Image (spheres, rainbow, N blue to C red):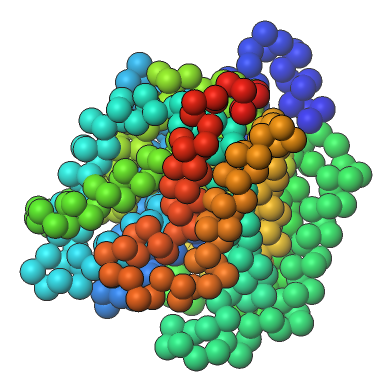
Length: 456
C-alpha cells in the first residue's frame, strides 16, 4: 500500500481511494490482474453453451469475443457512470452463471435457437433497467446479517471451483467419465508454489509488488505450464489480428414469451445477488452505498444485459472474485477496474491476444482462485462481525440456516433432483438459496426490531 499512499498524498490527499487515479503503467498492470482473475469464469459460459448447442467453431469464437467486449462495456458503465447509470465502484462485470440453464433450454428449441436467446436477453435487460428503482427501495431487507451470510456462502461455494482448478480442472470429463489427469502431483506442486509465492510476496514485499502478487503468481504458473508443454498455441495463425464486434451479427433476435419470462427471472435473481455485492463492496472500500447509488448500479446490470443481447453475448453481473482481489491488493480505485474493462474490450477485438490468454490451463490459475474466493468468504465474516449474536438468537438462526441451505447444491448436487425442472434456476445456485433464505428469515425474525438486532 505504500505506493498507493504515496500517490494519494502527493496530489490527491482529499480524494477518496475509490476516485484516486494512478500512473498509467501500474493502472494497466493492476487492470490486467483483474482480467486474469475473471477470464476463465468469463469464457466458461460461452464454452458450456457452445457444447450444449453444438455451435460451429466460428460461431463460438465470435460469441466468446463478443462476451469479452460486452463485459468490458458493462464494466465501463459501472466504473464511470452518470446520473442514471453506474455505481462508480471498482467492479468488474462478467456473465452470470444463473443464465446457463435457461439459455440452454431456450437454445435447444429448434424454433428459437440463438435468436430466441438474444431476444429474451434484450427484453430482460430492458425490464431490469425499469425495475431497478423498485429493487433499490428494498435496501432495508439487506442488513449486515443478510449481506454477510450471502457473501460467506458465495466464498465457500466458489472455493470448490478454485480447488478443482488447482488439481487440473473438473474431476469428470464432458462424457461423464473420470478425468485421469485430475489431481496430478505436478499440478498440486505448481498450485502450492503459486500459493507460497502469493504469501511470500505479501509477507516480505511492499508497495506495488505486493499489490500485484496474484498476477505474479499467475505468470509463474503460466511459465511452469509452458515448460511442461501444456500451453499450445496451435491454431493461433488462423485467428485474425483485429475483429470488429458488430451488434446483431448472428441475425435478428426473436421474441418468445416463455423465453422472455425465464430470462427476466434470471435478471431479477441477478439484481438480488448484485444488491448484496454492492452493499458489501461499499463497506469494503469504506464508501457507503446509498439508495441512489444502488439504483444506478442495478440499472447498469440491466443496461449491461441489454448490451449483451445486442452484441450476441450474455446477461452480466459483478464478479465476486474481483471484489476479493480488491481486498488482497488493497487497491480501491475504480479506474483500475476501468483499465481492466479496456483490456477486456481489446481482447474482444484482438482474437490472437484472447487466444493466448485462453491457452492458460486451469491448474495455473487454481491457487489464485482459491485465495480470491477465500477472501470473499472472509468479507462475509467481516460483515457478520458487526452483527449482534450474543443477545440476539434470531441473528444466529438467520446466518446458520442461510449458510446450511446455501451450501446444499455444492455438498449434495442431487438434493433437489425430483423437483420440477423449472425450479433449477433457484435450486442449482447456492447463492440464490442463501439470498432468499436470509431475506425471508430476517424479515420474519428481525424486521419488527431491526435496529436492536442489527447494530452497525
